[in-house]
Image 1 (cartoon, rainbow, N blue to C red):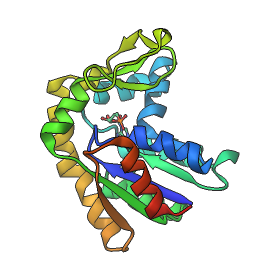
Image 2 (image 1 turned 180 degrees about the vertical axis):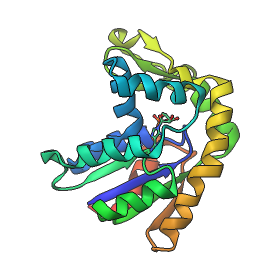
Image 3 (image 1 turned 90 degrees about the vertical axis):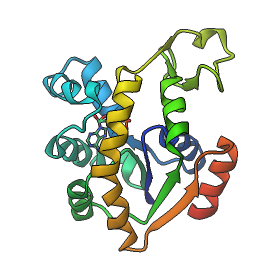
Image 4 (image 1 turned 45 degrees about the horizontal axis):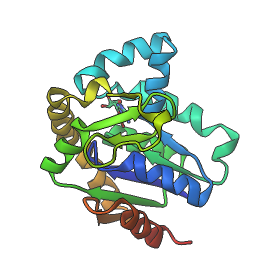
Length: 204
Ligand code: AMP
């Protein structure tokens, strides 16, 4: 099962992808996570990507496509995978079509005000990588109280990210609509119910 979780930044792609990994036993491929790992390892690619990411801009297509095609060669991708944050441009979607067969695209729809509130309040446990929200979902576990904010989760960067999403990434949805692969769901409610809806779409 090869699927794409689609949606604006803060739509809940990462949170839902983690639930689907548990449910289906296939990996989440988050280009954002791969790029952040390159940054924390201090690689040349990471340093280059950071310049784009911190401002809320997209990393060049060739870089991201290269990372994804390497990732897909790994053994754990044999039974399928869940893309989270990829493809983000039509160019990326076309490149992906040459190397993979995407079955379904699940699009999480969330209004802008909620996105800004979710992203600016988003914090990540430095210990476990779990995602929390300072107001709606603070960590209960003492171990996870050490929270960090992504440098691109500030209000200024979020506004740029939303603009780029509209200009560069929304056309990707049209691209997959033409292939009849898109399933849209309301991503603003209770996280567990959203997971259930996605599982209804993907099947047991
Ligand atoms: P995310 O964690 O998915 O919100 O991604 C964080 C940042 O990484 C984005 O704002 C981009 O700068 C970069 N990024 C992640 N995925 C892609 C992609 N598919 N294409 C270009 N840039 C990306």
